[in-house]
Image (cartoon, rainbow, N blue to C red; front, side, top):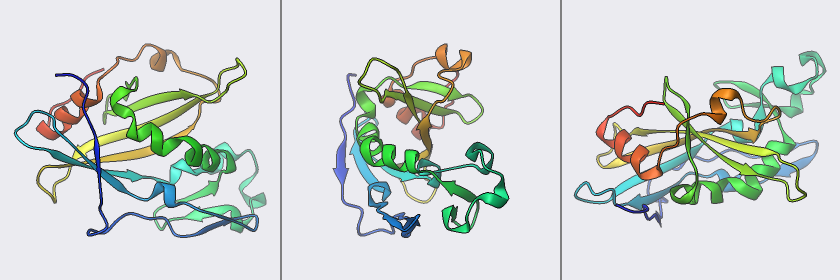
Length: 195
């Protein structure tokens, strides 16, 4: 069937997911690069399918456990609270999301994607962020599901995006590859992709 083509579409007419303003150590963070967007694609199912892309706050924040400081020493101004969870703002995750994340998502059809976890399942694509010969893998974890509220639409949720400090786990290194078109079609048809 070939590589799936994406056509970015305007979603201003429907409620879009946007993050409110964030200030880190007195510096405002522009999070508009994480605004929801949509694209249309033909998966060979009779007509185009819309895919709504949503980003989580995990793309610019990390857990308290990962921070390294005792919780009581983390200033309240460095804590992001979206009403469901509280996390610590991460300058590294924020900078990488601005530099790489949206383009990685737009280019998913041509990227190597592997199955990250079978329970969901969720998927991961990796980007080497260093140009000096060393390797730092920026991992983008996402899931795709059929939208119950709208016909002919899928929702792609970017669950998290960060540098893998320890590199690939044994499971990640041996994970099965899956084509973007295959995972979109499976999600639309309600089929499981097994790792």
